[in-house]
Length: 254
Image (cartoon, rainbow, N blue to C red; front, side, top):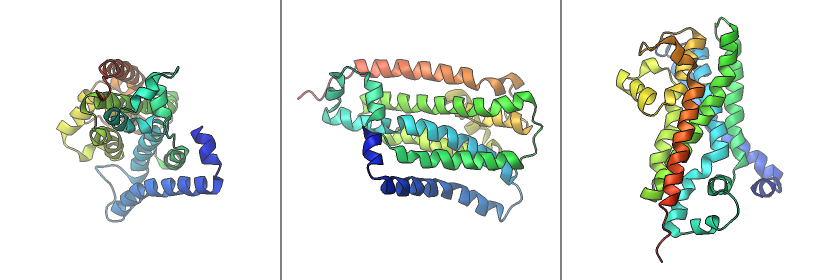
């Protein structure tokens, strides 16, 4: 329904998608400006940083397209409109995700994918079969990890009711963090996004393997291939958190 509504005004959709594309591209413009003053950022060249940027932006864009409206759940919990979703013969999670579905977010996905394609033509990589397979696996696994964070953040809103900014700190904030090399951050922060909220598996760890870089934490090499497993664990944990949150919902009490 929302897609049909959007495409009813195609010129408006094109302009909004282009605006989304341009707004997200400004993040990389800032990185390009940095490289006008330095030759490397944390020991990474511009194409290598573009590779990090492209992988995380594409992964996050896919998750944001499918589940980006999960931050609206707190508003529905607060005003009681979630009740209308509970009586419909469809999963509540699917209904919340589809609520006001924003097709314009394809602009972020296309911007990240284009930059990823450009970086792949510029990075100096030994394209072994493992490296070739790791790139698409990284993007898909990263999208699942971000999706799990969206769902877990929505589940938290059953308790907090208005915690969308807390959720955004890990989703939008997380993708901004992963656009830069791990070597520019403190070791404690890198450990936090590896062992606590495993965002490092979105692109940092597998990307280091593709680029032939050393892991700053000195983890075993097999960890670089663990993104699919981590994504499955995150999805299972997020699904459990969602079920617990939904069962605790008691409407507004009015």
